[in-house]
Length: 348
Image 1: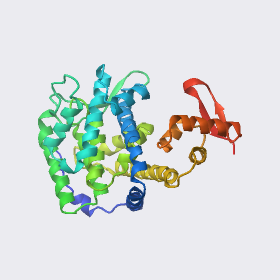
Image 2: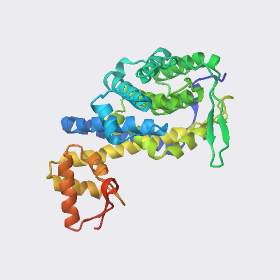
Image 3: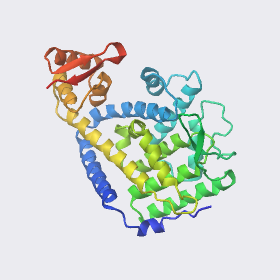
Image 4: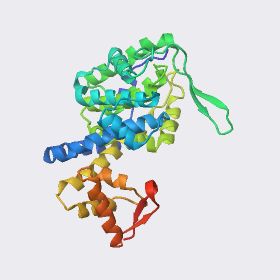
């Protein structure tokens, strides 16, 4: 089994791209803190939207897809799940809520990770919920011609509990002693977690939940207001590509985690930028028409009513629909499609 340790990370010289991303994230985090003090009530509405998007996107990455309306019912109204897919979504919702409410009381240890995994599967009968894997798993790709190729072989079941303990211990020591910048330590931990692949099922979803938990525990709260999972889902091919690159040589301790670190930091920074855009619309109390007009100016190309709703969560659906109708009538927007396929784009 490869050694886990952050001492070589501590002494590594990071390139200007990574250092630039870290500096930019700290700057945006500082700006977000000021925003939250100015408009706490309005911004609280972003939290529920982010929870719905995070639950929807993280499950969609794993192929669990359903309508936005049903997802919303499961997340916001805590409706009873009716089938396996809904049970998985309800479990994700529960873990996400616990992280939102109690992140500072959830230490990074194997025991707590197992508890979170157990909650993830609490709505179904899964005998391996809250237990590390009992069969060898593989990370593989299925190609268009139907053949399957193993891209990476994670640790064997018998190696997994010790490895999970080790990455937690090394991470906690590095963070506790301030040996490594948290924005470097977090992607490294998540990368090691995915290489160990400690569970029979749920590794990807657990990795995204743990990313949110680690960020919160280090003072980066953007995932509470903007869904990181939704950003990953939009670029999931790139996500899998950089993860595959970073896994090469992991067993021997010769891997290069830089592509994965850059990807995750870039995703975090993009979420902070989204938060800034949404705050700009909350900051000044404007009529619904002007708020929606400004929101459409943030969009390039085609966009939907839902895209505008995400930017203006404090407006009702009817206010948004009315404003869009007026902008179409005035010639500022062009409307295309019908029913669920309606979209808009700016003409000026």
